[in-house]
Image 1 (tube, rainbow, N blue to C red):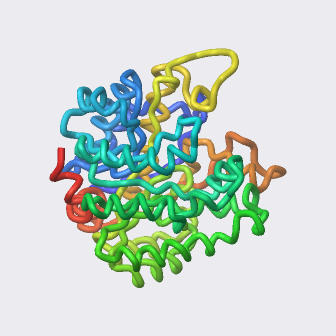
Image 2 (cartoon, helix red, strand yellow):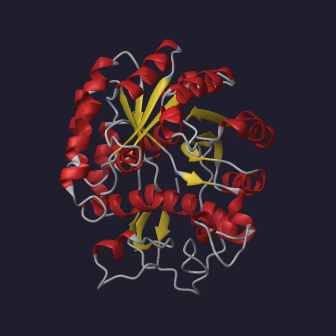
Image 3 (cartoon, helix red, strand yellow):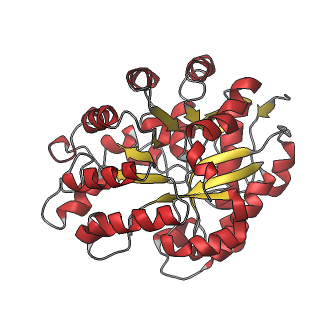
Amino acid sequence: MPSLAVRPRPGQFLNASNRFGLDYRAEAASFPHLGYEIIDVHSHINGPKAALVMREAMDLYGIGSIISMTHLEQIPAMREIFGDRIRFIAIPDWAAKDREHANGAGFLERIERFHALGARIVKFWQAPRLIDLAGMDGDPRRFALDSPTRVRAMELADSLDMIFMAHIADPDTWFRTKYADSAKYGTKRSHYEPLEALLERFRHRQWMVAHMGGWPEDLAFLSGLLDRNPNLVLDTSATKWVVREVSRHSPADVRAFFARYRGRLLFGSDIVTADEHFMASEGKTEMQAKADSAETAFDLYASRYWALRMLWEGNGEMESPISDPDLAMVEPSRYGPNDAPTLRGMSLPPDVLRTFYRDAALTALAPAFAAQ
């Protein structure tokens, strides 16, 4: 397989997803044809306009299939656009005003409705930010991973033979800043204690933990987690986080990790699409701040695939073309909000790359691909 030289790309800053003024459509042609299609196991695809732009980015960067945390009500529209290229993950109704119902009885109802529409994976989002959301209703621990509310949802999903997916913890940069109050948020390691207990309780069930298990900063910790729990696989989504932290490891160490856990590491992007990305306004929402036109939306989506393929296939190093505000969060005197970390190519071997990009998903998440 031809190697991709990760090289400096000085140019005009266009937006936070395109710091060097790259033509991501033209850039796609520089990536080798793999001979197989990549499966993206972690995304959030919503909005008919956005989905069409996302489909173009997928086509350009060799993404054949995608698994998405799409809003239940948008599944028919997304199927219309993607056909059998898309699979779905059951999630709560995060827009609901009644959080108690949405995470309790409402989530149980939605799991069954998602399942009826072919979803065979259920997501348990357990970022420390959930402590704040739960605390607004009086009990910051009410939606903890091992809470009765969550366990009831797991028992239902188990009865439906669904795969369990979880988001555990968050970047180290956030534990140094947003979550510095350990009395409120706990230590990062403490978030894995209920996970491991539930991995044992539901050891017959396949689990996938997002964002390299929530700890790409520490490959030794991830090794222990994988060694102790044979029913666990990790997706490698969250582009900015993964690019920043994986690039801090030596390519030799990353290649050794991927070889050791071949079949248990799955490619993901965590791309979030929404039709808000096409709405320009003076008072920008959080989504509009990321993109507010068809071209900035394309840069937002395509940049993630560009950076991830460079990370896993490339060699050499450069600054990432994607702004990473976490740098300024931790070191505001050194970095600005549009600065970016080093992107270092890992040059995964072709056989390991194919397992990571495609075969591991087809094996570990087989029920998701069997259902439609």
